[in-house]
Length: 405
Image (cartoon, rainbow, N blue to C red; front, side, top):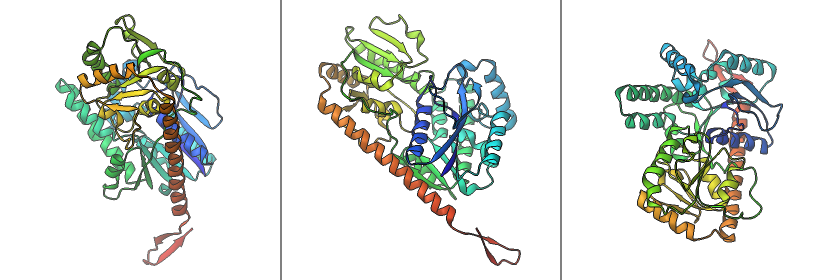
């Protein structure tokens, strides 16, 4: 099949979990033999790690509110003016609409995938709705509702509640317009399946993002590792919880390395914490840790960093939220539901050492999950292909059924 994949942010040097999760689907489609053209924005100042003629860049732009400066005020104004969610408006542009029209006029795509409900405004550009699929990496409206509940002032509570209401409208609109909704958890698929007039919802067993596994276990370079995009609210919340509630319970001689963008403020603040910034290889970083800590407190969908941590072969201590959507985690994961247990398990894991058995288990787990993901994609595309080949029945003015090829 020839597929047009419409996304928000392209995978680039400054990657985060959202883009990595999207790339998993793009790579999976290609692995199944499909021709995929990808369209999206590039983060301001980032660059694509490799050139690909099938990847089209709309433009460069800031998307994080903290970095967008005056654009954030404009997006908020436009959101209230248009009635669209703030998180949707910041991706809207005439350039994006123009490029979609140009690509649709130039090629006859068999399938068009709208990645994220924030791009719901692209749906009307596709005349043949039977060719539409949307990917929901999590239930966005629930995330905004959680944030609204935690808001400390009336204005923030109002803004996030409004965002939850508007993004839910877009999620539901897409789910009742497209032919298939792809999710990464059974819980999300159940939500869309229960919508009146909803499309077929399919839960995929999303694999780790790493293109290939390490050939052998790496030497342990530090005791505890944390990885994340710390500009994202849920990750920032998790990091603060770790530093305030767990770090004081740990022996001061343990070495803690934190990687990912957006936590520059950590530099020099703690004697035993080394902030690494963006690392070139996330799996290698986690494989060098005696234990990986994943202190997630909120969020939806599946955490890519949890999948990558499992694939690294290192021991892991995680909160229950951090392993959401992973029904069969390997024995390398220990789950802690409070700071005291979390600290205790980290200390215990540091005294142990990851074995070759752990590493082999991680490889087997990765391969099984990856193969199932490819099979899931193949089944979904086959189902779409079968539906597209079926003749469509339309009604004439005389109410006589006619066949349309």
